[in-house]
Amino acid sequence: MSSNPENEYSNQADHYDPQPVQEPPPPQIKIQLPDNKPFVVYIIMGITILVYLLQMGADLLFGYDLVAVYGMKINEYIYAGEYWRFITPIFLHGSLTHIGFNMYALYALGPQLERFYGSWQFLLLYFVSGFGGVVASFALTENPSVGASTAIFGLLGAYGIFSYLNQDTFGERAKRSLRSIVQIALFNLLIGLTPGIDNWGHMGGLVAGVIVAWFGGPQFKLVGDMFSLKAENTRTDDQLLLAALIAVLLFGAIAAYLIFSNS
Image 1 (spheres, rainbow, N blue to C red):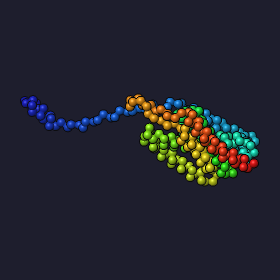
Image 2 (image 1 turned 90 degrees about the horizontal axis):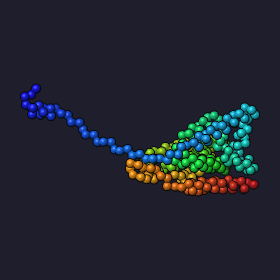
Image 3 (image 1 turned 60 degrees about the horizontal axis):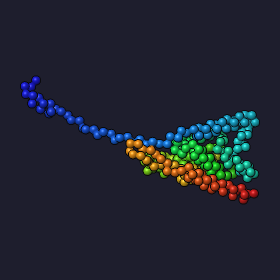
Image 4 (image 1 turned 120 degrees about the horizontal axis):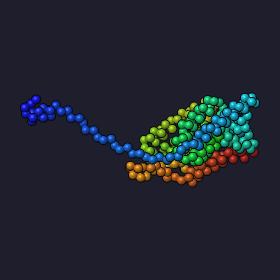
């Protein structure tokens, strides 16, 4: 022990290794997002799977898929007045792989979109996209077709537009989503160039979804202070309805022109 307390403190100071002062982490800013609980997407999935089971049952009972015969897109039957075929193909599928891929894509895209759009708005987007895809297929190919992919490509397009319109609000996250959506869409359209895939239906659904999302899809702004921010949709339900009407009228006009010019 040192007899000089001053020397003792001096020696301790000589050996003191100061640690760098750590800055406190920046405060986490929480944004309250829409709290719409998705359920319509699961109902659509359930109905689609049930229809496929009916297809399989009909095939076992009759030796052919009676359900698909009465619901798939067959141009000559549409010309004959069976206009329900502009919608029913989105519930039909040609194989277990086909429905599996489409239901996985719907599960990946649907719940998030339904949260931001709302339930009936999401349902409208789904059906308008499916209708647009079937009309494009009707207009541009004679081949019969089935599949929910027309509607799913509409969801893909709507998700891309949503990410683009909300870049200022959601920042880098929206930009990453937009890049990912564009890559997925291009990849799937390239795959659609292979024989047996109705790429015209995919592109029609994509265009219909883009129209609805661009003119009526949700566009959020942040309201409140930095400690209590809320994402608020600046667009109204009327704008979404008008956008859906524009898409339906556009594709409906194409279908009507082809039908009446062929009669």
